[in-house]
Image (tube, rainbow, N blue to C red; front, top):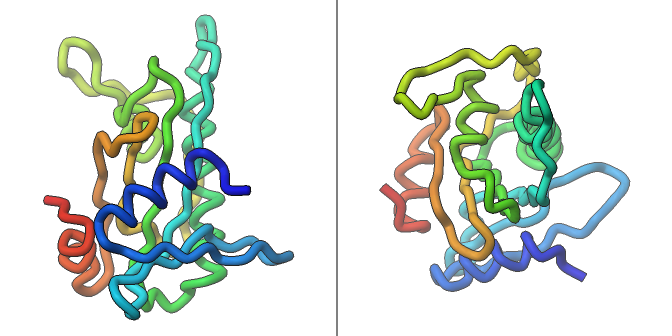
Length: 170
C-alpha cells in the first residue's frame, strides 16, 4: 500500500505525462521511484512525508532536524541506486503540517532562517556531513496535495535543464 505522500507525488508526476515506477523494497535501502518520460528514465525520486509536529518550547523546532535527517538518509538512498550520477536525483517532501512551509526546508539545507523582518539568522544546529554522498539535484515541496515550491542544488551535467523541461519548472 502506497503512503499518502507517495501517492500525491506520483499523481502529480503522472499529470505531467511521466511514468512513475516503484522500486521494490529490498534489504538495501533504495529510493522510492524511477521516473520515465516515454521509455527513457529521466530521474530518481525519493519521497519523505512530514507529519504534524508539536512546536518545541524555547528550543529549536524539531522539524529542522527531522528534515536534515531525511535529506541525509535520502543521500544514502540515492547513493545506492545512482552512485555514478547517470541521472538526476529528486527529493520530494510532502508536508502535512499547516504551520510549516518550504522555508523549513531552506533552513534545514542552509542552516539559516529568514526572520519576519526579512533578515537571515543562523540556526544553532549541528551540521550533517554531505561528504562522499551522492548529491540531490532538486527538492520538491508539496503542501498536502499541491506543489508549492522547489529548491535547486548544484546539479550534474544538463540535469537542471532536463528536469525543468520534464517538470515544467523555472
